[in-house]
Figure 1 (cartoon, one colour):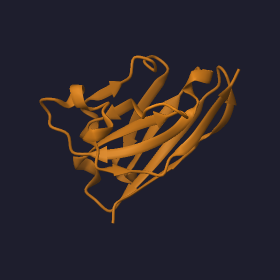
Figure 2: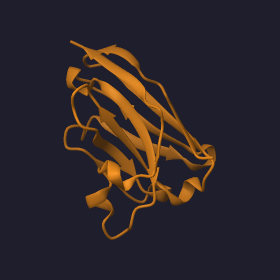
Figure 3: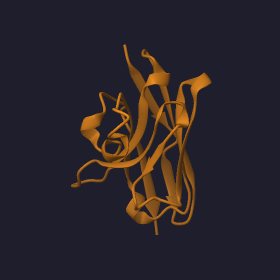
Figure 4: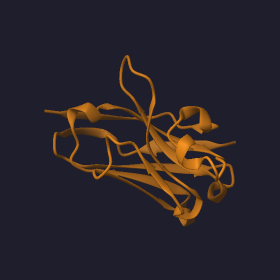
Length: 129
């Protein structure tokens, strides 16, 4: 059974940092793209960052470029999202996702929720001004 378990969320002041973790189990981790998404109340789920198998490619939403960094530890089947210079607009539930994406369309599809088959339960991030 596929399981994605997020951790590391919390409440911080603007300008602060958090590191999210997502531990994966139950499938061939190394063959999947891992993504981070977020959803604020009343808004659609949006792609934040994604990483190709073995870190051969990364995607970032424009709104987080230069502030967030996605990485993974294949030995631990874990993907991370380091979030720096947090802003109140980053407040949302953050979800980890896994899916097999085609190489040719990877950058076009990495930020789309429909590209992913498996999802975690989410971890809340709240940034106060």
